[in-house]
Length: 221
Length: 221
Image 1 (cartoon, chains in turn purple, cyan):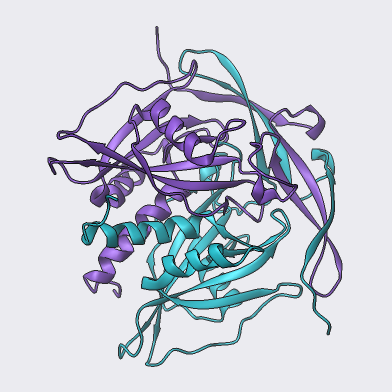
Image 2 (cartoon, chains in turn brown, yellow):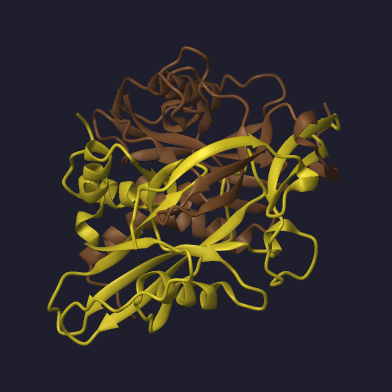
């Protein structure tokens, strides 16, 4: 099968009534002085049914996955897996954490284990942290998510299991030592013009780098 | 002036043609097998003019700010400032990094310094890192941003300068030791039901915590 870089052919305005996956909402709200105000937001039409009422944060839509791949015999340093995937909204390949939408009836943790298996082939043995419901882009959308940290213990050496991609999915996975993540992302943006980094992955790496610099007393110029 | 918690009164569907700040786009694209496909995305109608062509990542919309507040005499530990702000799309107070849209003609770094001053009162003396253009939520929107790390050196003790909020802005700032950030965010979601954490702030803190755990050899259960 011949392969070519994916690309955007054209874009056009889309009416909310004609959209299947997303929509626009006009939010009538009242500020702390009691003044009526308006906010415009975008929303996903697909949300899992894990919630119990209309509270937007009880209806969780998506998970991102930080997989900690480690060797029981310490044959390699603690590593993680990131993915490269073409994203039409940006018209670029995005470097990001494995992630996905939560299926009906799934818990966020089950969705995280499934998406990690599908997108990278790695099989998690446990959930290290599943944290809080997080606002994805709270000025612009109602979208929410969780960051689930998964434990991927391997018996000894690093392995490269087969991915389980769905038809049409083209996802490149890359295993990176956790300590090298910030440097690897810097290389992407310094060298790869057709690539853009997901902001959550970048903030994770920036936080890691900050801890290292604080420890080395290397914050100030 | 009396004060009351802000709240959402009602929401309604909004047509793209009637929206002022955001819109929906239908993206016609072609995958790596040459197959024509469709993607739906939301976009901001407001983008700065820092770009040179139609490439979406050349038209940067927003910045988030990690301010590193430090004492030249080491009178206090390196700290940062986070904000609490009611966000109608979530119907909750969101805990987040200071952030904002880039004004026409501004560089991302200028926008970061201005937004930090407005939202928190702190005056940055330099840019420590301004990194790459980042995809905010690449499966759903065209939104992009930068994380700008600013240097806020103080002569000695911590200070609490006045904020410079615009009319209608209600932003609570909170200064936190960098080392305590992850714990502070955990307290928010364990104790404060009306609060939700921004995903970028959480990933930053999770990355910091990961570095600390890796150093203590405390990754595995």
